[in-house]
Image (cartoon, rainbow, N blue to C red; front, side, top):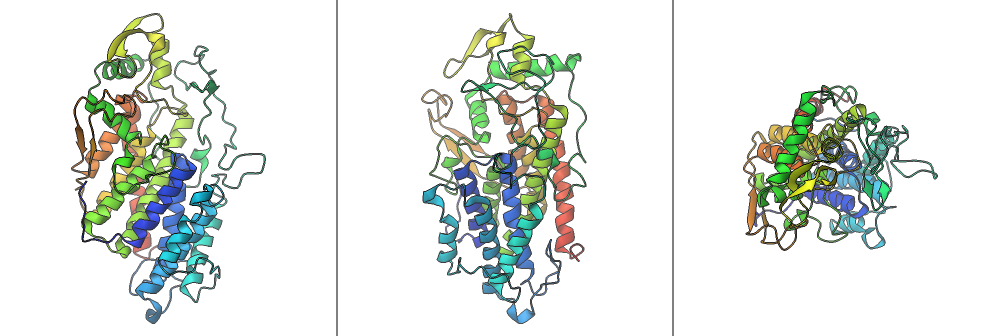
Length: 472
């Protein structure tokens, strides 16, 4: 991976990395991860605006009402303010769930910067207090956003309060409704739809979660229904080493190959799409040699695009409650012989249709639309808009036998996956889900369209904050 040895990462980059580390350590789902990132970076942006002398940017919570006089708008005061804002939000979101050995990761960075993590004042006449206040205001605003962060003791945090119930019984029982989601078995227990209430969460820029909801997917009585299943089978039967590794990479299995990613914790825990998008943004920041002011605004835009992308994707997933390829293919080809991937290191085999499995394990929620496609396209939209270019250039090297699903036999030779553009990476992220066998073509393509629309809406709104047209 290309690096800039003469460039010191911004403090904003480091706060983003620490947030992603915490997401990894506690195992947040993609939806919850996107919300956490949006809260942290919104609080940082809000705090920064109050010490941005001469700028038009205004806070999302207080407008320009708390902006400090010019003589106080120093680099040091800005850094103190947005770091206290980040620290306040991160402690609220993660401290209870972080493992004991990781509980001080935010505190340690504050002390490394010579900021006092024990300064809890919230007076707006000093940078620490104003940062703490901005963090608290974002926490308070999001406390009633229907994410269910503060569930009662009887329920888990972020648990589904909408009482989603699948219409199909879990496997191995047959489908009652052919084009609806069916829970798979994980460790002999039926899957539970992950954050099924997320389509009810308050978005940042969308007027309501279903604002850009895509048209319905193919129903089981349409020709396209079987055609899309056959397309997944064709990929399954002809998977190349590169396609397998692309499927693994975008499933978050190879993030440890990068310098700027978490190296410890649970090695079996895959990176979420929001974490991958943030790693891309940190790479862009290094490539363009951003200063903190640029990163404050870029990560504010990116994180809120990820928030709204998750909300919009889950709105569609629950609304359509659509069948996954594993259920559709096993149902369509029950009692028939098909050619497909036969399992780790088995290559293409003739198998019974009811025994088909995808290369990637099927996630615990409905198919339509692809969350990866939506997250990646939304991130692409705001990152390209912010940087004024789709130029990228990051790469990952998978050594011979370095597959996580087929270790020691895949790939047969070293494989380098490189992305010249952000758009190319986003499109590949969507396509990876077909290689992995867990999405249909429309789930990917409609997810990309949805992500682009979400990204455009978020970019428009953040620019209103940047120009001082909101928050008054």
